Image 1 (cartoon, rainbow, N blue to C red):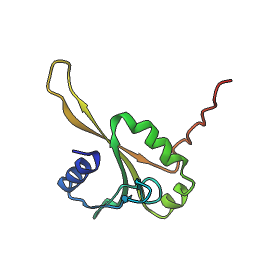
Image 2: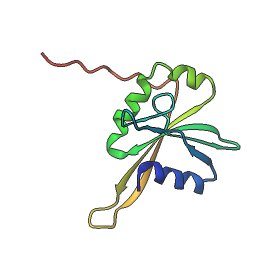
Image 3: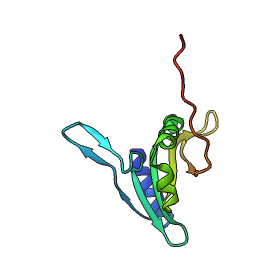
Image 4: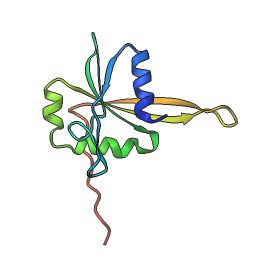
Length: 121
């Protein structure tokens, strides 16, 4: 099961109305996210509308950096869209059965900007 499918199922269990906004471009053979980082849109009364980036736990840091580096992020957040990063990892005690675990992180306007890495030389 993909992180997107896992997120869809979990969000529906939480009572969200949710839909996929990520599209596959068959000409370039690449996936295109809404605004460059939104895979899913979820909404629920009392919570509002959330743009979700879904991925595996191994890619949490790089996806967060990608979102924070997006030049349109301040406009998106100021317009009222909440942005969350949902990552899925198998976790559990050593020697015990591992279960899929969700890590949710809300991206806010006061989140620190990613530090640009310089190539050594």
